[in-house]
Image 1 (tube, rainbow, N blue to C red):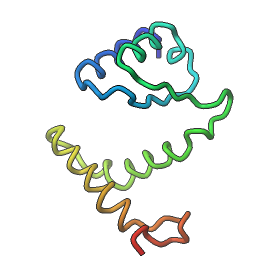
Image 2 (image 1 turned 30 degrees about the horizontal axis):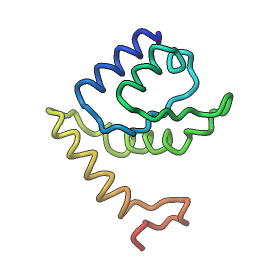
Image 3 (image 1 turned 135 degrees about the vertical axis):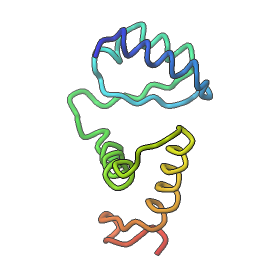
Image 4 (image 1 turned 180 degrees about the vertical axis):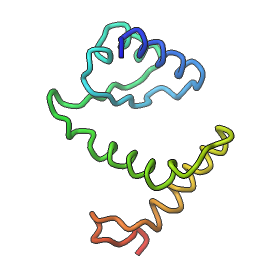
Length: 114
């Protein structure tokens, strides 16, 4: 993955979505994310940069675990027909199932709502 590709992808996403200033952009310390041009795009759109500590692959482990769970428990079962359908399914998974019903080993295998 080149700095040109990541910079172009970030710019296109930010230009089309127009997120509010202060959005946190988390990444590892890959050279493409540390590149001057990439950082300029972040500043142009008012993003706050968050990076993993040098050489520490565990900094983002909780989020990576969540994305893996979301993909395995929900997304792999769907072939979405539209963006709106994907948003609806993901929102329902997170807000209804994951946050309220799913048992979490970290909580002694009980759900958040118990």
